[in-house]
Image 1 (cartoon, rainbow, N blue to C red):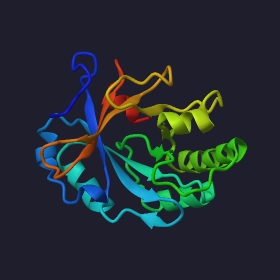
Image 2 (image 1 turned 90 degrees about the vertical axis):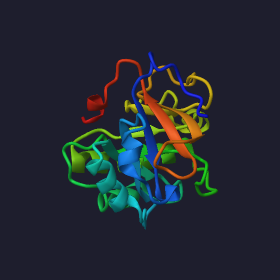
Image 3 (image 1 turned 45 degrees about the vertical axis):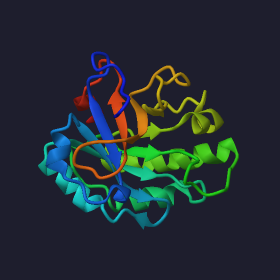
Image 4 (image 1 turned 30 degrees about the vertical axis):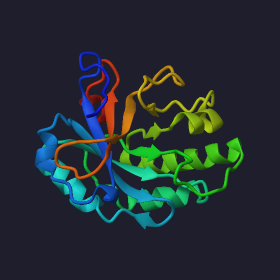
Length: 207
């Protein structure tokens, strides 16, 4: 059984998926109180998620609001990663704002200085935003946020990760990942579960 935040306070729920979820039955997912989905498009300088096109089409056909994300590598230049992401990212005015996944888990072993990381993230964001005309969202768990983003004035919407409790490391956040091993009808195995912040609508992410 999934633990979940109070539905009255956080009524809008979504998932984020990649090829790790395998074949997804998107109509069934849509029937299980899933309003939005972020789908992995790319990672680093050259990896493209092989399930992206299938998941993108399936989520759209099922009527689920959809967005794409890129897993950011600390070992590749930001511009190179932006080009990789943009080579996959659809030209769709209705899609949710692009997201960049900033975390240590699953990343390379390198831990650059703050100034270097901020430059590469800024290069990535600027390139994607110029190409698509909307600001990216930063997904950042607490350890990455504290190490690189806190008090840096990057002024981007934040997607937090805090399992079993509400996020406390950032005052303002847009999306909260509250479960990393949740279950949703239509997906075999576990999946990340998320909610939008109070008063935030899915349409607010289409900017």
